Image 1 (tube, rainbow, N blue to C red):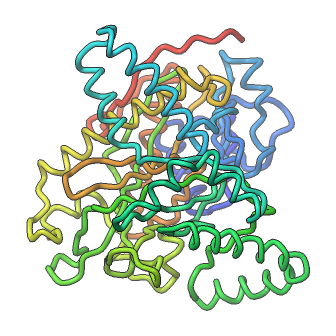
Image 2: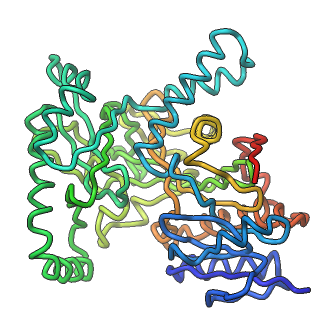
Length: 449
């Protein structure tokens, strides 16, 4: 009996890429785009905040993937998302998950219960995690109690001499919404007062703001990062990484910019983790300068959505391989071996992070044996070639890649078929993606169903 795949993405960019992959790898599978009423074999879908895998489904709406089909018929249905994965995708949970895992695994290392190679990977993860605090703040007046309780050591650090900067991030926001920099209690209070003001005004101005946002997006104006505490009360505070690797993306030695890497990571079953070497380098559109009281976020935040529609994508959105030969602020040129070192470190950090979620946060991360999922993992490089883990993003936005680098998305989707869909269906892969994909983790996770 012929298989049916449900594929439905809100982005035509992604929809077309996945449909192309079905024709390439599973030409006999019938692809449908309307939500099925009866069980299908494959669900490959971007399903918003709750991603999971069933037969084959691809869609961005929370209710498009039928998890019941996946849970009840693990032998015949596969899907493109796990149901529970906020241990990775929510910033506060990610920090708590990694800290819990490191506390456990580092104790095992201290009693020599871990192989030296594994201990080295754990050390990479420890170094990759910026110092972080998690807080719940519903209103700015809650900040006094929080500073005396959860943030007492942060308060001490802010009061120390020296130029100490921190970055505030809403735990459940994306697209750079609500991200702010601060270096003292006064500026932190001002930030939450701003959020409170947004909350008070949002009801009466909602319709007007929506109209203005539409006009701003159409005109290519600056992207707003405003949020309100009535919408977001969970926050993380991280020490600002003061030594980012700075590169001139033009290939010259004139203007050095901060950037981050976006790796598309594939988790399969329960659980293998793969990282295609097709990785993006996303640059801030403004040259880097040290944080100051009048900081311009465009020189510090590298989210492509923040840079505006008029950004020169050919200059500020590159593939990792295109960085070879570019000059750093120290005057050195990026080498191929340097890039290979970054890939090696990134793969080990990502593998350890996912293992941490499996071992230490099983309530909030539950891989399914008949599911796969693609995450967008953001990493920052420092001037000593260290890799810092910033966040895991569910339902990553492939559109930021752009037409010039569309081959990166093609490679990632191909990898999801060769290492995900085909493997879960028990079919052989005939492609050559494996040589361009690093296996980050192969860990047997058992759970009763």
